[in-house]
Length: 188
Image (cartoon, rainbow, N blue to C red; front, side):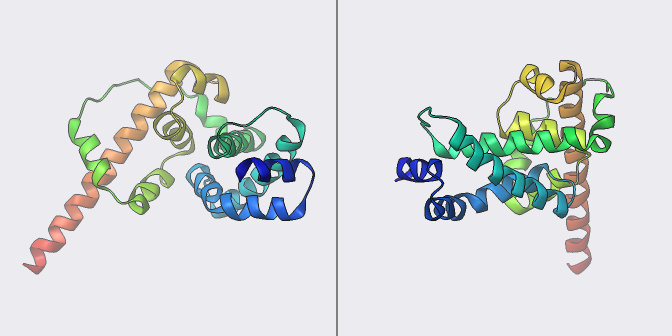
């Protein structure tokens, strides 16, 4: 079925494009929101992503093995390109932070217990450099070398931004847990 969608989109068939849109819009907007600073940015990235998806389908005759992964990759690349175009967001990305590997096992346990909504909120509250690196490394599975190339920063900056993202998330989780515990204690 997906191969038929691809063929239809390559032929500029509106029905195929509409089906592809409805199939992937929820996933694409989810990726866009993870990378965006504001809702307006997510909307802009979303529009650009679908334009890029349709035009990239037309440009390539290669067989796409996994349409899901391909759409996701195009969307991530669109988000990164968006921030390169809007340099004001990425000017502070090249700041070198002290890389500090944190080996807190509780961090992984805490993250696994968060709802998707809570995790997305934590990610959206990160500074842009941390957000981009966290998404690319933790969620998309890129290496620090690949991230450095994509964002035009050093590998050390990528590692530092990831470390900083994890530390900020831990602080926010600890604050959230403390506030929750205190409100429960007051009621008890």
